[in-house]
Image 1 (cartoon, helix red, strand yellow):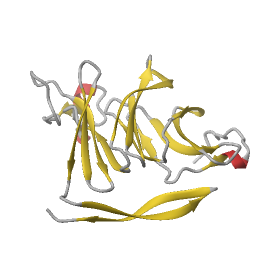
Image 2 (cartoon, helix red, strand yellow):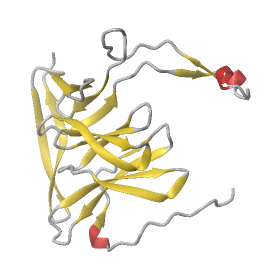
Image 3 (tube, one colour):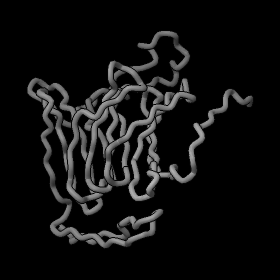
Image 4 (spheres, one colour):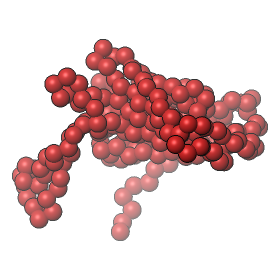
Length: 224
């Protein structure tokens, strides 16, 4: 195997760069990779939680955006088209990033939702009902239609007339399940339900750089 290329990050002072805790990474169907890091200011008091996006076809170009999350980012999730990205943090804030003018180096935060003070541990887009199956025996065919066929698959939620409804579902560390729906007028409709009757968290404070980071170590939930 031959070396194709080497990517080098722009050199910055070590005091300003630190890995995010935990490091989060997601790969889209467009071969875009999103991952997180933390940027520390000169006073070493506040951390800026960054999201970086790389096109694997041009990995030497890295687009970085300030996520504006106040707590560490816990989840990243691409949608089925690879043009929108969800980011969630340890304070329950979820943000939806959209590609501007179909440019991989231009992103904006359009909508979002929040479960105040509850860290998000799992995040997923609602399925749009589009699912393709690969015919292995015809993988060498030149016709795209012969390689793939559409599988009967129902969307997670539908509007009147059967049109798939867009949105996402998130699960917090204490057992809250929240579903956010994107309405046609651009508004977000959010509903939350608990997986159990009682929820409780036990926290352990770990030293993090100059301060302390609250890290949940166990969840106590009463049975249904």
